[in-house]
Length: 478
Image (cartoon, rainbow, N blue to C red; front, side, top):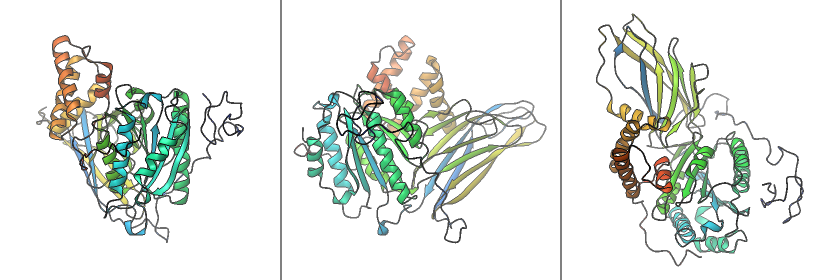
């Protein structure tokens, strides 16, 4: 379905003028200006800026030693943990720009959805306005049968939650019978483009919340491809049992940000808590990661393990010699992990160079951080004890491309242990328990509902957010 490039409303056809505002369609490809190619941050004299960030790069192999007289497959896990101040100085203005793209279609007209959404949004606004909180710019885009920008580029501390909810209530889009994700994302892309044109270093994140599925997937893919050309993170919130987690993951997984959380009425406020928290803790708005393999080492598979599980494409190493990705914005104190499956050459040497890890953090607080990875080779064919964390990551990620019951069982048992330790949503833990029982008894996940299987595919939230949960129903209109 075509949409208006001005107001986002549906048009009868790609050639027809908008029935709502009368704007005629523009030439194909001109709906959004050509996206900027953003340069790395430089000091005034053109030299790389002095680094203020501390970054720990921790490479770990599945085995610390492997046989020499063979060409073994090894798994390399790389943890990246940055530490430092926000990329933007809080005293000089906003430290981040958050763009919320919110579904108001007819399926949201339910007591467990629309009031919960408005309550979570008002709670986030209260959090961002607390004394001592860093300033964050906020933009809100609504979509249903068409799209509209509710407001944009407003400091969150200046927003009155009651006024915001009243504006949402008055929206003509509310509970329309269409899910115009394309229109919503186009508006978000324009806001992000304008923001980065004004200030390239501003951390900018788009959060897409929907309880259904895009009705124009080709259009959604096209606009996401445009957004992917900008240094902008995009995360998804699949809300409720009807949300199509798979389609949302197809749109955002693997990109900057790239997580898709399956949230329920009980956990949406925690997800919005995280939005507010992350916005104030970003230490870099880009993180260009590369693994350049040494001669003779062949890369076969690459995965992101956290945050969010994702298997990169078959050509992720590009002629099997180098892997590159932009991890997106980095949060101080948070660990970002990648896993690689590599084949080593047969050798008589007592050590094999695997390759060089490089992390480039553009901007005034960034720099270039490197680590070289080697592995001892044993002449007697012995293999060292495995690293438990690397094995756990390998088992969890194997389930992304493997469907046999044994692989799934291993992955689910590892995930259950991790989720309990990390205080994840108890509902998700219960679904994992049900999935384990189903695999043990029937060898499949047939006992799980479609919603439960979506929960397994998605990411999850930590139970018990930082904000207490007093009833705010008097603010949650609708």
